[in-house]
Length: 251
Ligand SMILES: C[S@@+](CC[C@H](N)C(=O)[O-])C[C@H]1O[C@@H](n2cnc3c(N)ncnc32)[C@H](O)[C@@H]1O
Image (cartoon, rainbow, N blue to C red):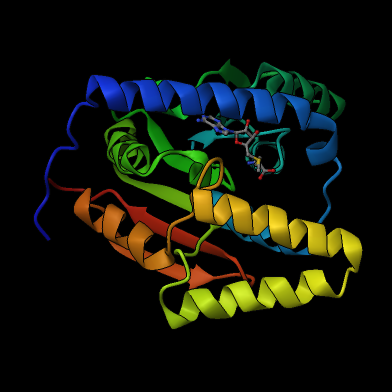
């Protein structure tokens, strides 16, 4: 597939990006306690698969983007003693909680960085795995594309990009409609609290104000376009999928 450099954001796109970063920071800073205790079965499944994919290649260096309170960072660091593990999140409160949880596990040498993914700078070809779980759907679509290209620059040849996330489009194809119907059925069973969540999620999906998931196919296209090889995608639970790709070892 033809590749093209993502354009530098226009002034209007930069304003949109900055507004989105501010809004994500505010939202997630308020949500630390709720997120730190999530333990939702579907999320646990995707977390387990993302951790397994990350550790399977025995990386010496891992960067976790939108790390939250460490659902990926901490098990990865525990499984890879001696590896350099860096956690990045837009919210300082999330990073503070991650630091507390890591210290409780005896992990004292994680690199923690409070920064938006959109502005992150990592040394070229210094990382074996760039991983992200349930965070990239918060980025604007143009920033998702820029992020995938950036990740390819940070990775060493042969390194992997591993993305776990809510993966669905806007309900136009039958797969999306099946995912949305599955979510609605689940929430309906939860009674009034579930009905409220249906309304909230429908509003978020339609307006794309804070959640902007794209389909698994769209993610694989972004990885293909950025030059990743061995690109694979699979659905893990109803709404969540995993996409991974490898940076070629030779140019
Ligand atoms: C749904 S939580 C997922 C946290 C963690 N990865 C996990 O699996 O539990 C989303 C995280 O993405 C972070 N986030 C949202 N937008 C971000 C951005 N633009 N740059 C970096 N982190 C971001 C939030 O602060 C939050 O911690």
